[in-house]
Image (cartoon, rainbow over all chains, first blue to last red; front, side, top):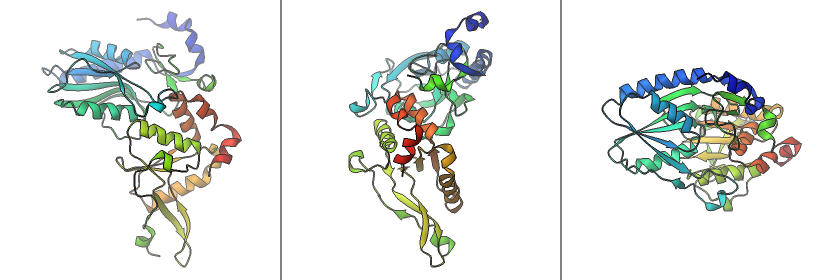
Length: 191
Length: 140
């Protein structure tokens, strides 16, 4: 898909100071990850599990690069915020529709940062007795990792900067940018 | 003072703690504890003090108490809201800590890191509290 005409008229691009990873680089890396997963899970019909919403772009492209029989399902969790913090603990707001007991599960993330949300979800899924549970993330931000989580499939390491695009948002914006870009500081902190 | 003596760590608060029982030095520390609680991560607030320097009589003249310890991760976390140019002393303490106690895992969350974390969680008001010179005044 030629995105150049779209980019030139994309009003979100004005807030981006630098493109870190182009859409072409993302496409190429995802194809490579898809080939690797297809080889590792041949004849095992793995279940791909994603946590909404940021993962939807990666999940769609990753699944289309997979050449074996797979299933997909999604979860959603409440994030810590000024609205949810009084509820006490993180909670599932959408659970899987597919039982995972006895299944090979690949947990797909757009980005692993502190690892807090992913740790909660992996603990939850582990109690459901999957045969295997591995993590696949397109982006990894290791600098602020609080929870050490083994990542089997990883696309790119990201620097310690506020980045958006390809599912990564800032206040629910910029997810639809087809690349990973650094958000200008005044856009990060403006209300 | 022998090398072995230097590695005696002082235990302050041995147990996993509750937010309500703690007088946090800075509001960002309380917020960090709330985030950990929200995601079900055990933490302890300033549970250990690491001696860093001794006088000729073996008395401790400098020590460092990281803000948090996450026992399930065996990870210490230090938060600072000071401006980057003002954290030289803290950086020196961290380097010294890792020289004397190389087995200790510690992460430093600087002011920009904390702001990013807060913005990520939509806590714009709290992020605003750690900007400008007022933030330095509130930090111990």
